Image 1: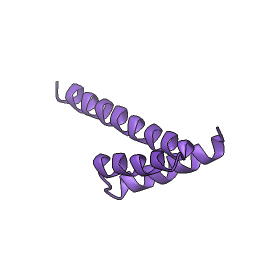
Image 2 (image 1 turned 135 degrees about the horizontal axis):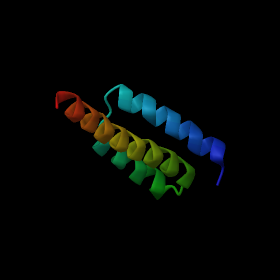
Image 3 (image 1 turned 45 degrees about the horizontal axis):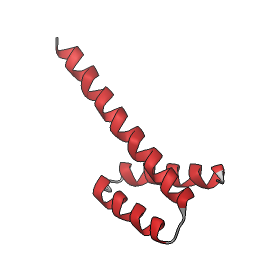
Image 4 (image 1 turned 90 degrees about the horizontal axis):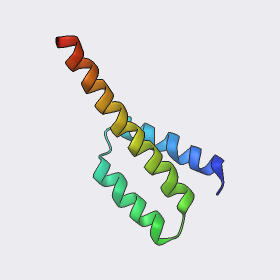
Length: 68
């Protein structure tokens, strides 16, 4: 697997998320890349989705702790 391609799709996906692209849209895009067997693209997109979900959960926990 070409790590530079994975990293490129990861960074592009982070930009898409920042611009408001939904997780559902990204999951639909993953399906398109799976259909053409571009697994590096899938890996990069999934990495960004997972990181974003994790980061969001952490941000929520931090806000919750600040309120206490």
